[in-house]
Length: 416
Image 1 (cartoon, rainbow, N blue to C red):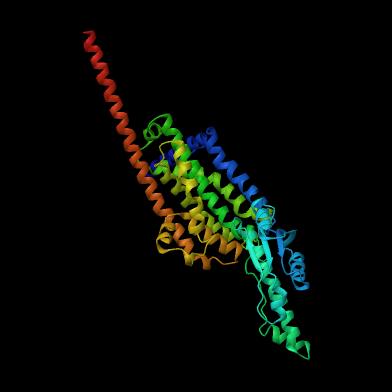
Image 2 (spheres, rainbow, N blue to C red; image 1 turned 60 degrees about the vertical axis):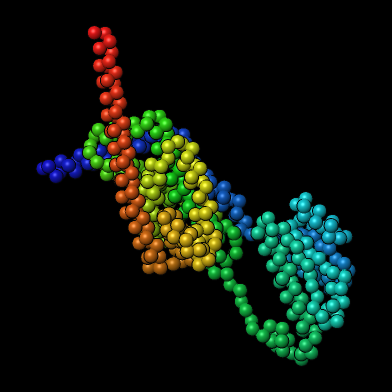
């Protein structure tokens, strides 16, 4: 009977902590913003901005000192492409640079005076391409369009000079090896499909850590260690505190996670190859790891503002270290080791491989196992830091009671 009694008391205590933490969540406006408003609204805004996937009709200016039929043909072919729009013609480079400085164009196509003459002499002709590097998508459109047009015109010139008798001979002489460019896992070549899946998974970790840390900072500001004293009266140990709080956060973020990893990609038609079962298998340890990670980090937060400075600062580095926006093989070994400390690293990799690349659970078995290692490590760490906080809370309480008794004794002696 004592075993059943202990189980009953444990469940009661866990439910008590869950209820108190749920009240705390809905009473704190800052926590509501990070737990509900940011995960619900921010992905919509981010997805809507990148919903066009590609930047088309990038404006450019042409500086044509050749004034030849060949240079005009080059310009027409660039203007006919979906990525570039010839918006201006300039007399010289100074005028073209002024247009770039005023952000009216994103690139310059420069044709020297000897452009047509060099082609007629069977010498190599050059086209100067100058790009505004402030936006990589604009640079990519301007440069690749000029490159593709130059390759196509080069084929046409080779065909005229080849003296071939059949169309087959012309095709072989201009392109001996036929290449079909098929973009894998991102058919549209869009920026949103490329970067958004990693951002969605990172939002889960960052908002959880921000909300948990903000709640902990608030309670510490209101009463030093007083937030743990009422809890510590109900039972001995910290396991029930950690499980009760984790249950509260998990119930909230189970719904938020479903919205982020399944609702948002479907709403904006991003690649979604995984079924619900593999996603649920991966998301379960990932959410637990993020929760215990946030609880561990929350004990380092003394004031509300600290957690925002800490977690927002590391958001962009974490996205890079996860291998979503930069190849994992090109990340230095030291930073790869640092990335292993964060659940988002393996959550992002597993989600992208499942949902964007069509991988199976066996293909992400390593990430799945490491996420469970993170669950165990951060659970133990959360219990340890909460245990230390309870120790400090009781110590502070005993010191306060001793001080009150001494003050009371001193007043009684003064009256006597």
